[in-house]
Image 1 (tube, helix red, strand yellow):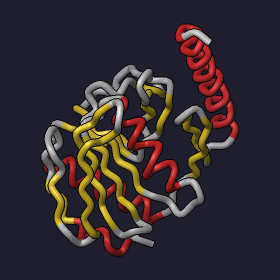
Image 2 (cartoon, rainbow, N blue to C red):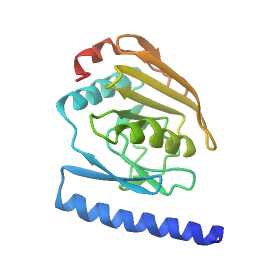
Image 3 (cartoon, rainbow, N blue to C red):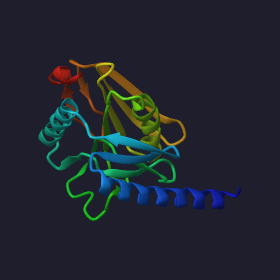
Image 4 (cartoon, rainbow, N blue to C red):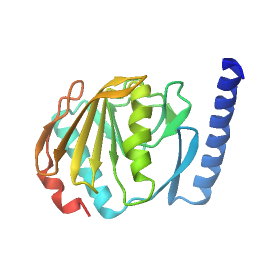
Length: 197
């Protein structure tokens, strides 16, 4: 198969995915769909602890960097050729950055993506393997993973589209971590201890 034919097939697959996701989400608002690494994934509505972590992080980002918003659930075009579709728990970008971009925005200008692990069978592949690779390929400078299963915060930075993030730093919940530039926010993760369930 030629490179042109492969790209056409990938675009067609993304188009089909977007139609399926749009229809399914109209029928059932409790689920959202992603398309990463050539496969469709299902994201269920989060629980209270997951939502509390999201809100805590939104407050931290807004206090430290008021010129930025942490957008929960903004769809992004990811992977090397933007053929993937990811729904990060948060996308840090300038205020009004996603204005007029629709359900699946280009990641250019996004400073950081955030994922908070869930207790489901896909969380390892989705949040620890596929998404870091997809975000790095798309050039997102920082990927923050709040890993409830391991009670840790994992900061990925220095993206390389061929190998993923070159730098990965892990701290236990309760420690302080500074998110590298261009984010430049310091987080005291002690507040997250009650939400690890």
